[in-house]
Length: 267
Image (tube, rainbow, N blue to C red; front, side, top):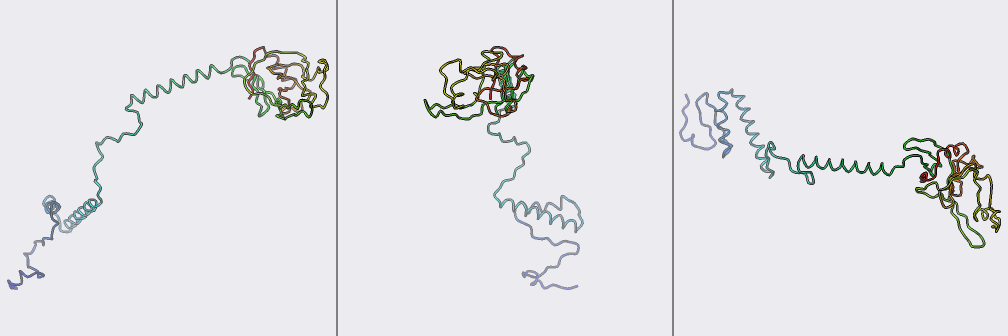
């Protein structure tokens, strides 16, 4: 047996013999983490040395992670049981949401009712100038879709006399049939003579021209009308002086359904 010099046991940097089977006590961190680590083996009971070492190492890793989190300045708290933050502008509760939905549905019904009231009833005519199309309708039913010709948009200027100017546009909006004529006679306006380079006649009878407007004419104000044409090959083009030109067969169908006061919508 080796005898140790008592003077060596108290000197720093020298090892002290311990009884066999006892593990050397490692330095523990101060504070509550030290107590936690010291109590861990007692809670676990007898554990093999390798497993105990692994558990102790894991405990130190957890302590290190907690220390690292603490250094960030953030506080980590559990979210369970905490109410969500209110959203700005959100209705307060299901009752308020239900009330808002009910108001919107009421408003939708009111708008639909106004739209239905504004929709035309019975037979009416719709003119699409962009595509030169005429639609004869009864409520939502399309009775006829026809090719037509609307105003050309050209400008005619008078070179002498009053220096007048005419623009050959078809007016847009809602109109009504104010008069109807079979075998209509065209009373030529001043611009018709200016366009042809002819003097404007003083005798009204010299203004009358027969057969130019086709079999029927539906007048809707300010000299504008839906009428026939001698030049059906030009239908589908914007070539008129503002009136709506329609082919013979289609004009007959429009006439058969027309009446005084019938709405005409032009857009």
